[in-house]
Image 1 (tube, rainbow, N blue to C red):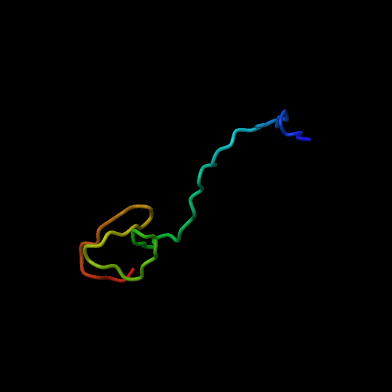
Image 2: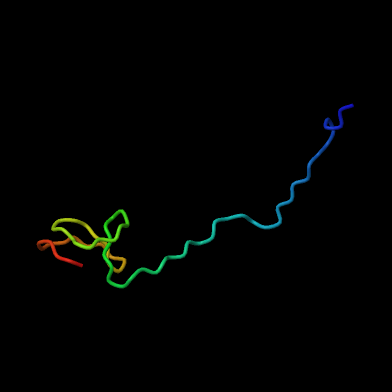
Length: 65
């Protein structure tokens, strides 16, 4: 006896599915990060860094953050 031959399965989608907006994490003010997201203690000349959400290139010799 095969009951699955005429069986149907109802599909209910009550709400639309989606990914919610991402929320930014708060970072320490003035902290400097490299482009991979690692916090750096010392910055080197000619490298690209992120501070306060803005990218910059270090123009002078190495300095401590």
